Length: 444
Image (tube, rainbow, N blue to C red; front, side):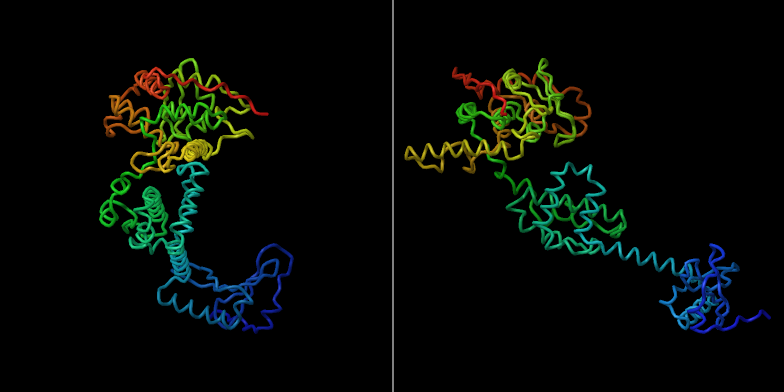
């Protein structure tokens, strides 16, 4: 019969100490329950172990640290563990399973707000630059945080998504559309990452789900495009713009001549431009569609670039204090032009509601992005081939198969279109040429 260990008392446990003669933990037989041991580290930290046979192998079951777990409680835990072993239960594996279940439960309690941040961390490079990420956070905070920010991603349902989208679906359709897409992406990530059941349907998906509850974005947004200048007003607007100096006005003229987006122009660098070839190659990472875009520049666009002062940086259009122009610079030029036109009308005693350059359908003052719509309307009215016009705007043309087999971007034909567009802006068809302003002076 094995020798029974002496049954120690609370004072014995308190006094137990490491001898300090080596760096290994020591074990002190506690008694009272066979196999119960007090483990003492070289630093005199103490913990409880139960040495016992589990499945024919000698194992050590941790029972907690002393003094958080008292001697009496350690003996109770040891007896419970031995009872489980007799019933065929491995206390060590049971504890692992419990911890795994707890970790899984904690993952499933991840809130939507926290999931947004984790998704941004995981997919930041795909989302875009800092500006895009800042816009995403701001949109979520403004429209979604109060409704779903504290809800666990595992509990998000379609009705929760609807509470966010419905109030802005008809009035801020594009914002709502993008927010829905972000919701869908975040919840897909959450499912794969284990924060939500993998086989659960995504409550933010469109087809077969929200499409049955909300009108199509394109149907809602008809007539809600960015306000554009009417064709008949374009030459007069161009003449007014040509009288304005400053880098912002120059960037706006270039954006209009190339039918380009404001961000593409503001980020343009000299290394992207070949003046001799009349070519501007915008890299994929600065394009909305994430594909390289070759811009066929007209002679007027080339002349504008040649007249620009150079900065120490490689930026084509730069701010007076250095760096790129802000996203509001071009908008301010158009707002100032509109304000000048309204003041002139008011001075003449005319109603200002129709003064300046306004969208024919909405009556709203035109904005820089609306110039792309003006170009598209001009192209349609002047018989420009649909594909040429769409390629000039860097839009997708045709289905995936057609795009895969297209081997040319029709650059030279597009160059002819952009030259005709420039002639129209300058009023050359009416034999009233509007010259470019004098070259910009470098500001000190």
